[in-house]
Length: 462
Length: 140
Image (cartoon, rainbow over all chains, first blue to last red; front, side):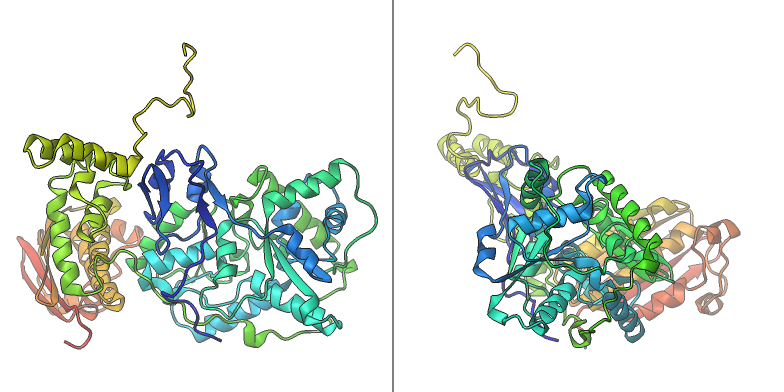
């Protein structure tokens, strides 16, 4: 167990492509941690506030929010190229396409081994049981969704002790399969272990894990990119009987785990599944008020329908869920024929099952020092008497309260508010030239010039 | 710093909004989260008490001099026997209120547990005032 985490460094998988961004503020309005501001006509993400949930990515009308990924060619630097896939990858394809065809396509892409992330669920469940017995906090909150773990750290710091500090399946499986490949005689330097990710949060978690030892995953491939590649092989009919190495460990629990209710179905006590980041925020508010003490376990996921609704998932999340539920019940029916078990050639991960401390990192504090924070708070409340209060976003902050907080922390000025600007000009506290310059600093100097390069704009008389 | 909130008796749908708002303030003031947790739980109980028993109430929150002082005063039936009301499990809540998941008789004792100082004064037939004081530094 190590104590990584805290304030040190945050890796984010979401990036603003400035050349594409039109500064339209859609993302700023939806961000659940108020991490976005507009400066120079472009959205910018405040690193320590961002939880990589991907709401900005979903809302961007010009696809200016990008998700970083590793170059697929990097896999060829390794002799053994294993890919860990979440079950929702299978759900992307029609039920007419057999799982073996998808595996074959992954082989054609260049992977030598294909394993399902959900294969280590039994180990995760063992660790859950152990953690429950050793910890009195209730409700316990699943550590599965990395965006939620980060949301709790920054917005609900008093609830970090409620997080079930158990390694999620992706990390367990990565550890398990790395050990397995080593035990089969592969050289450590020859093993490349890759993960097909449905979302940005998982990338961020892998690149800078919270409360966890270093990740054993070599690289991350985005699901939408992989989907296109696989679909290409399927459409061109280039899949065959040749398959990468795999195992036969797929269980219904493993298939369903990342979907909504995937965890709570294993709970014997009162457990609540909640999906969608806004719903999660609401339920966490309730937990903080001490209203949910009689709930034993909370399964919280940032995306609707869990990972099937991840931002990098193509297709329809409900069809994905439907396919996986069918797959799970057919695996259940054929259970008698399926004799493979994780315990065959058991590799113990007991010492790796648990996460270290998860540090709270309150982003809402106005100052580290309480009395300085009080002064800033008083000033903020006074400022709110003057700001218009209808949250137009024209100052480059999502709402008036956030602008006021930015001002008292020295990150913005009163004159950033266009209404205050008018007042200041009227009272001769600000010149028109200066006001125009300020607006230019927020919205970019050319913002008010004619520009047909936006949705719905076209000038046929030019 | 002073905050004032009004609460309407019987408005269970909004019970907890004062606690949520105060919680947000304490977070912005960077108050140790183990302390703000206690404050919020005590305040939430107090808020629910007013909603469940009184006709209307006012919550005054004062954060000053290293402590948070919450004064919950209501117009309502009052508490005839305060020591009895403090007992865990004692409740005068109506069956309807209990059905909504409130009125388990833990309110006042929970408030005492989650504050450093608690004072109650009550006049039967007029109303009740509960003062909750909690210090903002762990060992003050």
